[in-house]
Image 1 (tube, protein in one colour):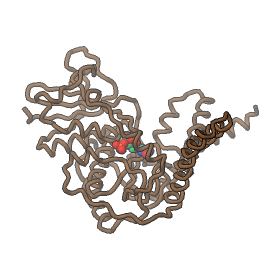
Image 2 (cartoon, helix red, strand yellow):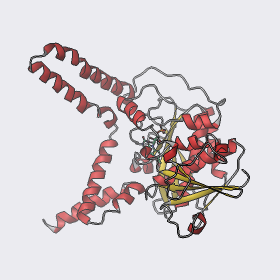
Image 3 (spheres, protein in one colour):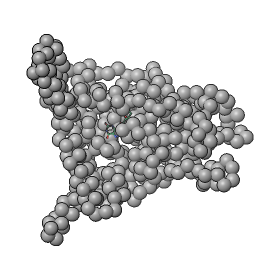
Image 4 (cartoon, rainbow, N blue to C red):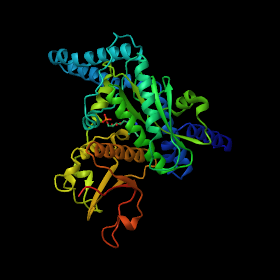
Length: 402
Ligand SMILES: Cc1cc2nc3c(=O)[nH]c(=O)nc-3n(C[C@H](O)[C@H](O)[C@H](O)COP(=O)(O)O)c2cc1C
């Protein structure tokens, strides 16, 4: 193998690498063998290329449909034409659905849909519990009233106090950024943190953006967080001069718009699969070993009521559910320590930030106020010499409860 060929391949891999988001790059950086690293980059590149053609959402059911046609053909050949003539309806219906999805969602030939109703009468717990990722949007633009109201809420939340000092930005983009597997999204918020890695800034992205997501939900609009499914080349193109490669890092996006009934079959399946949640007993613990489930119906925890459920239903990248909480009480003080279950540098931190927002907003709705603080390990230990779980994020302290 000539040196030139190897250099060319390395160059091509590095071009693909440069076009990836920080999370994908962080995963690739864990591979140190140069051959494996190149292979991994190529694999990620092909996967993303397929995702970002905008066709994969519609073509995912095609292999199953073809397989069913084949199976029905075989059944016919082995001498069971009666059974085959019944079963043939299955792949035929699937084919019809695939064609319908392409016409209505890809080419947007469809009947207009009504504007959704605002959910202003609903309490914050209901909104947190019932928010769902919206992955198929109406093609109509946002009304001026909605756009202005949203921008006002964004400005308000960006001015609120943050967990850290690093600046974060939310850029409003009105353009069809390429995302996966979401279809027909035309409005996005792009969350940007400083290029130099800062975990607290990423927690802040999660916390601030989740508050905006809930305001948007209350207005009756749909949202979808997008991390690994964002085509960073497309994001940067649409951001133009608002993005500085040297200083900025795109953490994630949030698609915003009116939910559409026209949803490709694959997305319906995807939505259903990614909406399950772990039980509370696997999310909230009473000890640092995370063995003893927190007794949420006993004092003092029962005062927090639906806050536990609201964290349980918080969104996380591909529903990874990477946040855990260890709750302690000492004298009159209640403390919750939030941890991530993985060493993921970006999306686990965003997910914890979302938990922080839900916990905080739930507490406020109940009239319970607390503060977020980063505690050193010795202050998180219950017993001397105790082992703490890895990936500590932040703690929430509340004095007034007992
Ligand atoms: C940081 C983050 C990144 C996400 N990235 C994507 C994505 O790229 N594509 C997507 O369709 N959904 C994405 N999601 C949405 C999750 O898949 C979704 O929240 C989760 O499956 C739970 O489903 P629910 O939001 O309907 O409750 C992301 C969520 C978070 C918090």
